Image (tube, rainbow, N blue to C red; front, top):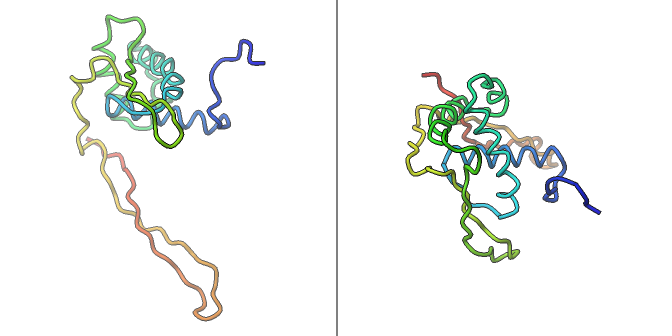
Length: 161
């Protein structure tokens, strides 16, 4: 029985669930809106409200720093989003149902921050992509000896202003 048990597990353990929630919240604040399942959107709605309330209070900036990994995103929440929602106490997000996903019949919603149309897009100055070479070592083959495979990936790097 799930009497008085808060939240949904979403088929994940605690660490996977917290990482999923942090990723969804950061994408929501980065772009202003995101498309996800209705269950995930309802799960992060309270978390988004708590973060915006932290951003409104100037004394709790340290708690906000602990949540965000990107400094530009933290400044965006406290500098742009929180002042626009200063008149509200809660209910900072809206959800619009888009339909069902074909594969598993999950209800998709578009979750957006109230007043997100006025947000400026984050420029390329804040987040810069850098190419990094990663070596993958395959097990030795009998004919050629040891073989290595190169793979290049792009990694986001913070740039100071």
